[in-house]
Structure formats: structure tokens, C-alpha cells
Amino acid sequence: MKVVIIGNNVAGTFTAQNLRSLNEDIEIEVFTQEQYPYYTRIKLPELIPEKVTIDSLIVFKEDWYDAKRINLHLNKKAVNIDPKNKSILFEKEDKPVLYDKLILALGSTPNIPPIKNAREMKDGNRGVFTLRTIDDALQIRDYIEKFDIKKAIVIGGGLLGLELANQLKDTNLETTVVEFFPRLLPRQLDEECGTMLKNEIESRDIKVVLDATTEEILGNGKVSGIKLKDGRIFEAGLILIQAGIRLTIDLAKNAGIETNRGIIVNEFLETSEKDIYAVGDCVEYKNQVWGIIPACMEQSKIVAASIIGSKRVRYEGTTPKNTLKIVGLELTSIGIIDPSKEESGGWEILKKADKEDCCYQKIILKDNKLKGAILFGENKVMSYIYKKMEEDIDQEELRKLLELYIFVCNNCGMEYDEAKMNVLFYDLPADFKCPGCGGSKDNFKKKE
Image 1: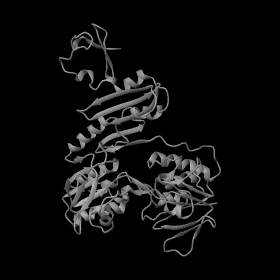
Image 2: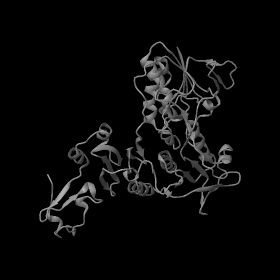
Image 3: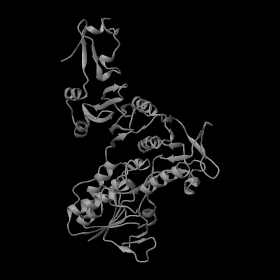
Image 4: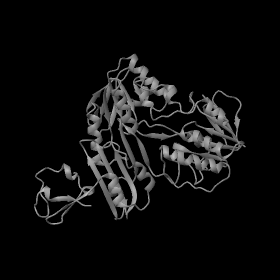
């Protein structure tokens, strides 16, 4: 059996690896329009200030593919799929490639919002860029050097946008982040933690502008700045747009495969066409898309099993989770982070906020089951959180891990529960009075 995979991203590469671990005999062909084997995109921003090399970004080199007997074809852009004849035509190739099973790991591309002049200036290499590939990072670096750029603007305050801003600052550029939403990382952080992150970023001399809609890219010939909807103008010689992703579906759509926002699949990652599967960022399942690495990894196992006819595990969606470094600080965001937006009651929040040390831990429970968490600047409890998601938890054990305590007033029995307060007990002012009896802070003892 010959399996062809289009795309050597996380989803495509790990699907190939999982296929080989399940079956030693199938023929595996991976085609990509990139000129590099599989590499990590997480550290792409660090390529701009030359903190990393291209070679260090490449995760699997040629010997890995040889050892796994996976045939990798670089610089191959698929332009047409013929499901009836089970063939794929590639750009500048006359002879189509045949397959028995086809897996589409087409990924996604950076979204460019409807900003006046944005696409024209990007396509004309006039100072507007997106960052998705190694080549993108090299082009950005070359442009900075060629035109001696002093100021940069990042449109989009998401995970990649913030890390990009951090690396541009380290390239000695005066850097501004412009974010459409009223807080940073609205999908990963609540308002309090978003404010903490904003303060931390601004302490590094990166300007953050929130609740801002970019209306126009300014400049004649090359970029000179941006104009916001409210009329404000910010000057810059370089604009980087990191405003979400757009799923790559045109190849599938043109082949008559059912699509919506993404390529529509069932619980076994099968598309509407027989023997064609999809995996990773390009996938839509039950009206939902993910665009996160954990989903790619989970789907790659299920699609590999489906290909060889072992349909024991069904895809049921992926709990949103991110663990990475943002401006040098650890961030983990998983599951539900704002229960106020959820229906019904039974929600409980355990929270520890230390603004001086930029540390924030928020645990979301429902009926004593762990439903979500934000861990920022401190990840001691990360393994516990990952292990216990959707399970009943021992609150006493969790409080010990978080170092959250209850202090009891000896006079009236009033309890000060650090998990429910915005200030830790020892950070309370010396003149703090017990809300119950008016006694001093000294009357409180830690509850054992």
C-alpha cells in the first residue's frame, strides 16, 4: 500500500512516524513545498536576531527519514488532486503521483485582516510581512539590515506576535504591539492575568496598544507606519501581521472534497472522498477547528490507525492547551479559563496572584472536577494539572501544591482563604483588621 502525505508540518511528519511504527511494509511518501525537512516553528522569531541557526531548528534530518524509510520530497507544490484516478499533480511536473491512501496535512497560513494596503505591500516586499516559515524569518532579517530599520509594529498580540515583538526588541528595534482585543491573549488568559502580562511586556520597553483596529498601512514605495480606526498614527519601517491563521483548504475544495472553514472530517479523520484523509490545522470536525500542536499530535495517531484499518480510537476533539515561554516567562493555559461565560453553576476558582514576581495561578473546578487552568510565571503544578484534567481532585493536595493557605482569626473564627482573595495573607498591610471582629492581623494563624 502506498500512502502519500501532503505537508511535512507537525501533523504530516508525526502521521508518517506513527504510520511507520504501526506498519513496517507500507510505502510512505511525504511531499512539501518547503525546501527544509520538518522544523519547529516555535523558535522562528529567534532566527531574526540570529539567536538560533536554521540547522538547529530542523528537528528531523535526512538520516531520520532514511531510518524510518519515509521518502521526503522537498520543493513540491501540489496543484491538483484527482480522487477518481487517485492521483496528484505537482507544479512543474507532467507525470502525476499515484496513491492508495492520501493524507492532507495542508496546515494554515497567517491571516491578513482587511487592512488598506496590507496585502499589496506584503506581496510587493515593501515592508509588510507575516512569519510562518524559515524563509519568512530570513526575509524579515534581510529587510531590517538592508533598510536599516529602527521601528517595528506587530499587528496582533497573540502568542507568536508577542514572542516576535520580544525578538524584534532584541534586534534593537523600537517595537510596538497593536492588538484588536481589549486585552492580550484573550483565548488563553483572563483579564487580570492579561493585565499582568501587559505590564511585564511594557517593562521590557515594548509598547502595547489594546482595543485598536488597524485601518491602513501607510507609506509610498515602502512602509512608513499605520493608521488606526480612531485616527491615531504610529510610525514604523517594518510591519509584521500576526493576526491569527487561515486554514489551507483550496487544494481539497478544488478536488470536490467537502470543506467549510476547514476540510471536514469524521471521527476517523476521513474526508468526504474515499481513501482521502486530513489532519492538523486544516481540519474541521463538528464545526470546530483547533490550530494547536496538541490537536495535531492527537489527530496524527488516529489518522495513522485509520489508514491501516484499525478504527478503535475515535477523535473527540482536543482540549485547548498551550505550554510555552512568552517573553521568557512560562505560560500554561488549558481548558476553560473563564467560567463566567459558561452556563449553569457549580464553578469554583482557586487563585494565587503575585504581581511583584509576575506569577499567576488560577485553577477552575466544577463539582470538584478540574476543568481548566492558567499558570503564568510558575509551572510547578503543570504536570498535576495535565494529569488531573476532567478528574475529581483532592483540594487539600492542590492547595499544598499551589501554596495557598487558610488563615483563621483566633478571636472570632473568621477565615481568610488565600485561594479566594486577591492578596496573599502575608502581603496584607500591617494595619489589616479582621472583617469579623476588627482584630489585628497578628490574631490570625494558619489553618493546619
